[in-house]
Image 1 (cartoon, helix red, strand yellow):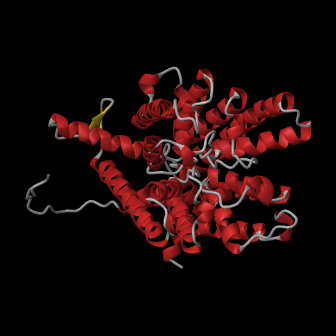
Image 2: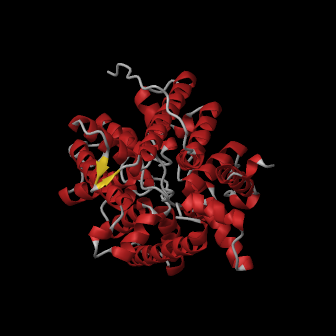
Length: 441
């Protein structure tokens, strides 16, 4: 048991245990719509997708009862907050105190500065989460009630469900076509996009912006790097999606200019692991899918509700390439030097992410007859815990679906645990080996 006391290992173990428990709830007869049957694989896939914000195997609108939908919504909330953060919050609610082990785990998951502020950070994470979700839920309630003739109770339920899955970047919608029927409605699309962006930036950045919003000079390197990277990927991704799909008759082509811009913008947002869609990616231009693959692989900010290798990892490597191109012997960003340890960790996370995506793609190519384009999109979406699909998920054989389940779990907890493990294992050697320079390139 001593080995399982490591916070990284316990975080991974708690994630798997939570997914297994949720799958058990979804197997209950009360969770499945009358006349339908839920297999273990469908329950496990749905539980993993809800907890990580990943892919979906069955139709949310027709397969689950209200009880099943509430289980999915609650799981998305727990997964977005972070399994150990959720456990810490529950522990404080029940005992009004946070034990040492939970402080270790919460500090690891929320990127807290230390054990002393872990409890405060957990409470702030919960406060920010519930506040943003409540605001978005109210806006969606008004739009659905007034414009779509829903009853107040149904509109409120739909507003809460979609605000939770949006902020936690789960991408689950209570419609068979996800959000395609709202591709013309900014009152629905924009609040969901805003919640996805706020959930994807990362809690450390949100806290710092709340504290120092009017003093950018005081922002940390992490906040500046995250905001710059997020802005570049968001604007670039939205522009690329809009341009490639502008004349596509199967996606944005038939829409008005304003609706095309809305759809392109949402495409740039949702690929950052939000997972909603307002057009069919199976009919999208191959260039759009390639751009989306890149966005899904990078993901959102550190200590956020998103997956991927994270924006900071991507930006640290970008600054490293820039420094090498300039001939600098250090990697600098915003007047600060990036530590060699952070550079090594970013390289390890990125390369491991590439290896996982390649391995998953090979597994699916070997067991299915789908094209590389389709399989790569599905695997990247699973690893990035996005949930976008070309429509092949339900057609995959059982082995391939289990591969996607593993990819979703690894994509959600892998980058966090790997970065934390590397940081915790860091040690100073008291000697240096003779230096020799290999030929590179």
